[in-house]
Length: 322
Ligand SMILES: NC(=O)c1ccc[n+]([C@@H]2O[C@H](COP(=O)([O-])OP(=O)(O)OC[C@H]3O[C@@H](n4cnc5c(N)ncnc54)[C@H](O)[C@@H]3O)[C@@H](O)[C@H]2O)c1
Ligand SMILES: O=C(O)[C@H](O)CO
Image 1: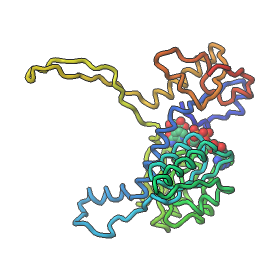
Image 2: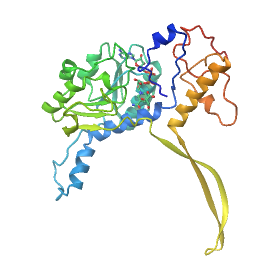
Image 3: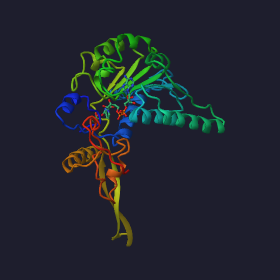
Image 4: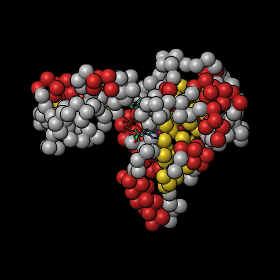
């Protein structure tokens, strides 16, 4: 179960009349949050500083100890401004007042409107407004941005999108984050680039030969690496509050019950509803970017398949109800 379906040969599946379902929407914010975390951790050299501290090497404040990059007023570059790329951009812009440059095959009008409105808000409050730019080429993003996060789908147009030549045009102290798919970066070229550019830093959730890393990557202090954990999150939800009599205080105190809602539970729900929908002969859900109605605990899920990526090619009908 996943939103990314690069591991499935969709054309072959379509040829044999097999539907391919995915799980969009439920992991957008969690993946964007992980990309934002990697950006911060890399910018402020948190892992290096943590290891230094634990090794007992800290013997007093020094003006130049672990100097990192301040994000405020810098430029964030997003390659692939779809669901996750746009959510990540909003976090970095609103959280750190960064300017945006993005590259996508399609215009992201909603994202542009968000940055414009936020810029106006900042201006009205006497602050420097944030700005946005849609880049004509991906190279423009690589040249201009201080932090670059990769969020495209993996296909033949994005395989090794970041290669030796493109790394070379990035700023020497840039930060590169990848929470999309490993092969979007030529990882061997990245290792070489990290070796000769110690102030260039990366945050990686995904790897070219997952679960393995290319030789040398683990030795690089300027790389932060985590094991594909972008969707590994949960929310604790309160379900009930009871009063109980506290014996020593002699008064009623609230007793709160929680349960955890896991992101991967949401993904599993969409995957299961895709299967159920197919068995029942349901139509395709009209907008796979808006799957919230499938999680409304007060009503039964809609009689539709939440997201079948080759539904149109297979001639499946679309649901008119939203
Ligand atoms: N690390 C994780 O655990 C994790 C979790 C969820 C999704 N993902 C990955 O994140 C990526 C984005 O997912 P999403 O739900 O936002 O998908 P999405 O389809 O909403 O967005 C992808 C965007 O990439 C753009 N794009 C496609 N080809 C491009 C190209 N050649 N150059 C620039 N842009 C291009 C598309 O136009 C689209 O806007 C996928 O690769 C997915 O597999 C990873
Ligand atoms: O594409 C996805 O959904 C993720 O990589 C799985 O967490």
